[in-house]
Image (cartoon, rainbow, N blue to C red; front, side):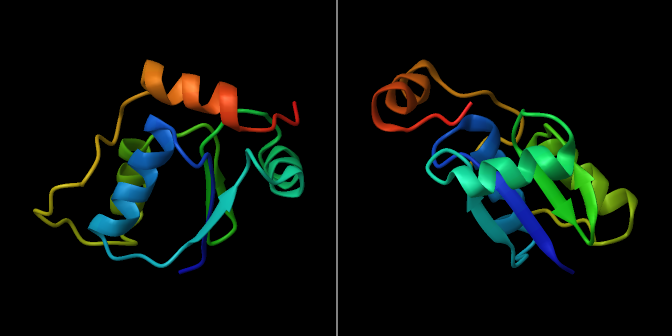
Length: 111
């Protein structure tokens, strides 16, 4: 399975996607859309919209998704088997105020 995840370095939604990848032991490309303008532009081009996270699984783009939505897609398409693993981060939570502040002071915005 080929997975490309367009994620922010620190973000509740992005951490939820990473937690699902870890829960199912899935290899994926973690593309930083905050500090790399090329990755952000590619995500917008492929997804047709500017919101993240976006996860491309076997050429199917899931735009503006939570970890929970990614997990549901993987399970409903029989790409993974259900397991009792507990994700190491919430899979359906937005960024905390602290994460928003950290991004505001330490990141470069391309949009």
